[in-house]
Image (tube, rainbow, N blue to C red):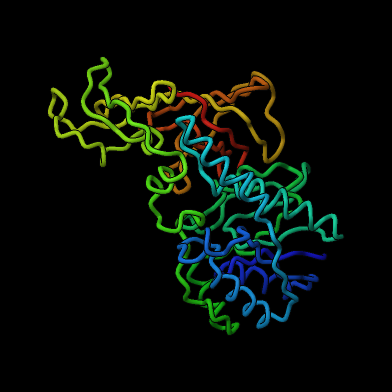
Length: 358
């Protein structure tokens, strides 16, 4: 097959590209430039998109022996990821830009361009697996639970999964580093990226405040009593305890947590930890990674709401517009805007964006 290897400049994408070539595929390496001004997002960033990363990707491609190109995806990235990130926080939601980037950039935009150029698919260094079935390729967890990235890939639809290739899904991370060193790749011991690539400082609240401005509002308890003030409700998220500036505990002596954000009134509501308990989640904008569930049918499976969170047993159903999940055991601190991912054992069924909880 003719494949494009998305090369971030890290060890995982480098080894994935090397394995794809070794498997006999016709591979070219591509690094995604996500800003027209490298100083704006990437210089000094601790994410996966620095100028240094592009140099590392080029050197890896040279060692592997594949052609290498840089694709300017800055317009797509800004409109689909950065502006979405800002808009969701302004609405009082808590978005995950890495899921959005996978959905709109690394697979939708890159895969569309690759297929238009006559390529069969895209290779990435994500830790996940695909398996053939009567319904085409399906998405599964990686064998390394500590590195499994199926949660952030659950935004891929069935067509995108057919063109996705994850050569590292059957390998644990330490073995990938050993293999990279054996192949002579200089990124063998390069640290993993963790931060949002377009927030160079890693301080989300400060970055948001610079772009959305300061807007003073009240911090209140569940009965509406004012406990303090804030400079922007969008800098808080459900479940947050630190940074509230409130020294008065609850009547029971417990610390206070953010229970919800009310963007219309610019209010942050706080309360005891027990008030964060969630038994039910309603999701919208569902994406199915395999066969679409039958309307109205209740399924038993697992629900995961954070990238490396604990999967929880749940019942869920699909009415054509919303996914409704009933948790067998409660979770705490689920915010609107987060992704809820449904699993059938290790198979990724699909995902939805949390709209409300109860």
